[in-house]
Length: 411
Image 1 (cartoon, rainbow, N blue to C red):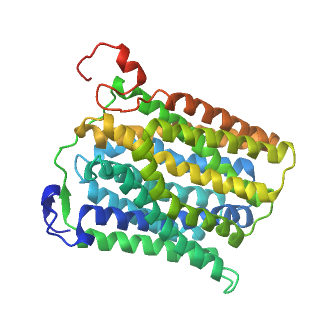
Image 2: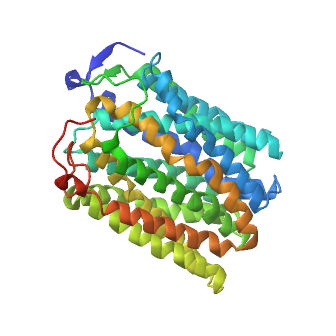
């Protein structure tokens, strides 16, 4: 990696070598491995690993443990720059993904999943911090939307190749995992040497930061993590277990999601910038309540596969509005709090993720529909919390209650 350059002195660099350029390259590199792993996972664990619903719950509990331990990033960035840690984490994610099919037993799958998850969660923690440090507040929603679109576009290419070649060339799980993981790792290594180190203007606090005035952000992160687990763990699993989707059919469903997100994510960025975080998040959570209740109806009332596929697409689309949670924190945070709070928030986001998949895996064996009703209840709690965000959040005006509290120094 070359010399260190302050952010305000990067205008002379070619566009592709500027900080935003690196964010876009990383946004495209990460899902090549992670999204491919996710697309094949349900078929892989059912066909090769012989997993049932409970086994699947334990797999995702193990996968989320590194997210719960993301607070360890604070200790690492004392010695390693965030930009370096992001790229090293991408390499780990890529290599672990590449080796996934080498360990088809339950113990092997859990172990390699843990390694890939460390790479994914540590990358995501640092990447979120870099985005909020490197992007100006007035342009952050729009650029974050474009970054989501870039990740969707890269994943679209990967999924398109799977759909076109899986049956035509009788591909194996090992081949697809090796190629996708290897590409992600290779891109990260190239970025390590191709980009200078970018120096943000505000030094980051390198210790754990918990501030009372961030309480609403913490609560929203906790509920988002709990709610997200039900979608990640059980929505795709339902498509394979209940409706018998094959690899290319599951991937085809993901492709529809990606095409929509490529168009919708930049629009969502503009929506957040125009209507604010409160309204954007409220719209997301109302939509998710309806989607999860309809998921439950698939089991309670035997609704069909077409509805399930439509709901899966809508579910994925609503989650794109979660970028509003990032910009809400960017507006209320002290500049030096971004890196440590990103780590703390990731840990809070994954508190429920450590135990919820395993517990709900047992509930799934008894009543899959009840799992989705519970998710609707979680989305309702998130909706209530979102309505506590003020129209114009800023330090000292973090919640709607701030107007009733006499101004005091930030903690």
